[in-house]
Image (spheres, rainbow, N blue to C red):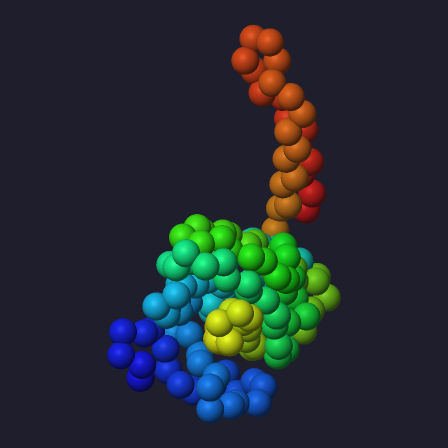
Length: 168
């Protein structure tokens, strides 16, 4: 274990090829002297047809800009997309990148595992965040209701106008 770090130097998911320099984050957090990364997608239960958003928070702890690249691997990767796959976090600033998880309605019911891989390119550091998507069967009581809300405008008297669409 790295003193002062929240990591284990092993690949917890068994996905991908392990190298000596590779590090695996524990509990959705990884921290070095230069940066900290927090991820809200770790081990989640989802249903067929469900869509969810999660986030990756990049905290730059130094004055130098840090270039990050984001990728994924494993069986869970086919359900995961990112708002962007690369970014520059300016010195002493914080950035958040959204993670989109979309589960098709006709998905096989099982647990999908993988890694979200983040490289700090100009610092030559890489970390893997283990991810598990546990897809459960929908029962009659669990049927999902999708709500889409779109902002239209604010009226002169301060009312907010929205359009909503509900689908089952």
